[in-house]
Length: 116
Length: 112
Image 1 (cartoon, rainbow over the protein chains, first blue to last red):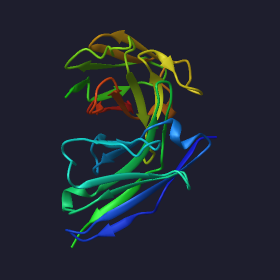
Image 2: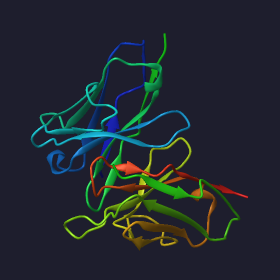
Image 3: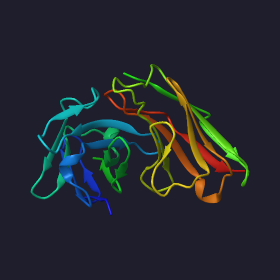
Image 4: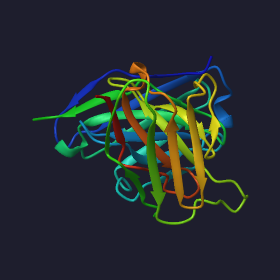
């Protein structure tokens, strides 16, 4: 059974950095890109970017370029997403997701609240 | 970037009746490999999204056959043949043909 298990909710102050983890099981970690998706409260889904666990290459949406880092640790089958210079608009649920040509699996989501 | 536009944004449906959601892309979703990477996702209240349909019309594992997808090029449709209570939620189309990936705004399916 494929599972993506994310780290718990975070509360951060404006200007801080948050790092979320996504541990996978049930498939070969390096076989699929790991994507990260943002969902602000009551809003839709927004693709943030991806990391290729095989070689660490990344690709980011322009909106997050310069503030986001995505990494993958193949020794623990865990992907990470780090978002810096947090502002109130970054309050959202963040999902990790694998999306292949014929499949897609999502983590349970991690709520990040940015508040002074 | 490819913009995905869904209609309607809200769809009140009677139990047992059909429902249909449209999704239009700002450019063709046909990939250079010949595939069209258009998927449909369902997000039930308080849950993460889950895959229903991939490559326009292929149901993902475990998805009931009352869900079907169709379309080509820039115009796509998700149909539910007979809506059940468990189908309540928000439905998103998503394109994975070109980076950055993009989603429609979402269509909220609710029971009348």
